[in-house]
Image 1 (cartoon, helix red, strand yellow):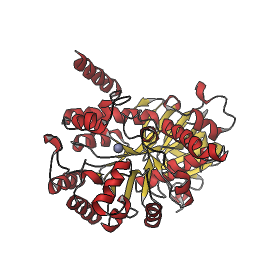
Image 2 (spheres, protein in one colour; image 1 turned 180 degrees about the horizontal axis):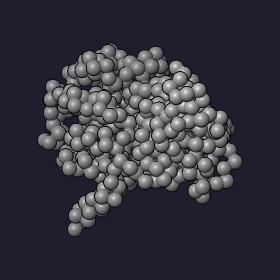
Image 3 (cartoon, protein in one colour; image 1 turned 60 degrees about the vertical axis):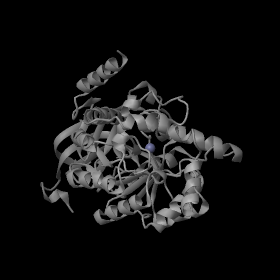
Image 4 (spheres, protein in one colour; image 1 turned 60 degrees about the horizontal axis):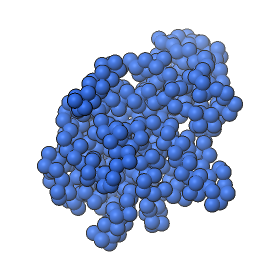
Length: 446
Ligand SMILES: [Zn+2]
């Protein structure tokens, strides 16, 4: 399409123009002195500064800044946001001692505040899109996330295991009906999608797994689950079905491009082959995973599987994907690099590729998010190159990887809309939310 036709010979009309900035080019390069034009939520073009005349409704100066695609959190838990600081260094088993009792006492009010808190943290941290792993009262969270402007895929916590605390105990039909309602009310509203979820296979009956598969397929939406995270969970699958978890998913007809397996740490050769063949999405959560196992990512990449990254929620080291990428590199270096004397087992550009390609797959947006190129969705963040941590910046991609953090994220645009400019969030009342969070802690401590 020739956009010039709409506004004279050399004048291009756009909603937003970022002028004279550096731009991340793919995963390894940087272009300098560029203009990024945005129209109808999409990137219209990336052109040399002053090479084209624009008629822009709004403008941002990109001087001393670098624009890069926004980060994607492929696995986070809104319902654990208020558990920050209460999981670290705790005795096992955290799931039954801390997580389950806490989640079973969630209320609509707590979920609203949790989502507000998570949205603030993500916007400041440069996370433009995320996959919520499944919680309760998700309609409260959905309303907040829609207002925030973030790109999100939301799920309900879905399990029907025996012995769950009374407030969250339910049978298979009730469990799947929760997501049916969330899907009907919120899928496609603003930047929101709704996915079906299996909390973990060992917390779900065969009937529930079957129902989730059917309901997800009918609506052509993604299905997600915590997968292959603990040795005991994998052993249980062999005892229960005589096969590995991903093999069972294949037999149940759930494994496809529309499946997202979080963690995916302990995988058999056959399971890796299945994930690659079906094109399923996977992600790792490095901070959280460090207590369990190191994923065999070099082997996954060789097989064409590109995992994304998740934080596993605020209670596992916060929602910083910058931290997750650096922890991941350290683990890969120690476990796979050192024995081979290979200092480039997982170079920065490879990790950025995982962030963006794995993130796009998890959001079911392959080829539509994760690059600053014409035709991609306008989900991007502006990095302030004047902050001390970003200088000196001799090799931009490596410096970005080593020193990038929420301190450097200055602007955020999602679907063409400015959510944060000069560190000021436009879509949520940050002062009120932080006040409420502090007040909540005072009440708890008094
Ligand atoms: Zn999780």
